[in-house]
Length: 58
Image 1: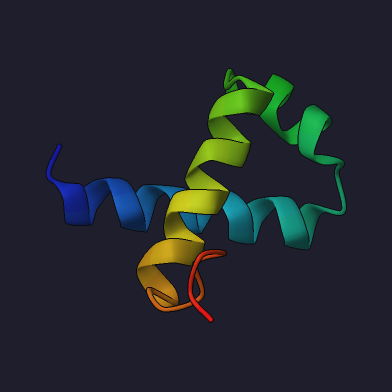
Image 2: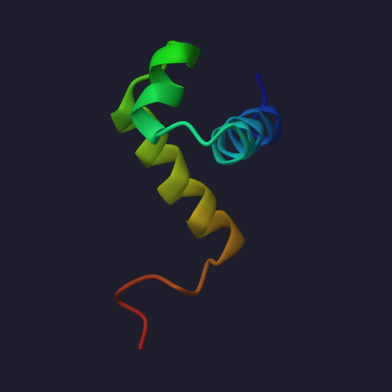
C-alpha cells in the first residue's frame, strides 16, 4: 500500500468513527485496530495537514 493509499485509508477510518458516533476504542475494536495505532495516525495526519504546527515552532 502506498503512502497516499494509507493516508486515504486512515481518513476514511476517522470519518467513519465520527459519523458512527462510536468512541475511538469502540471503532478500533470493530475495525480490528489498536487504539495506539489510531492515535498515531491521527497525529501523523495532523502533521501532514499542518506541517508548521509542530510544538517546537514559535
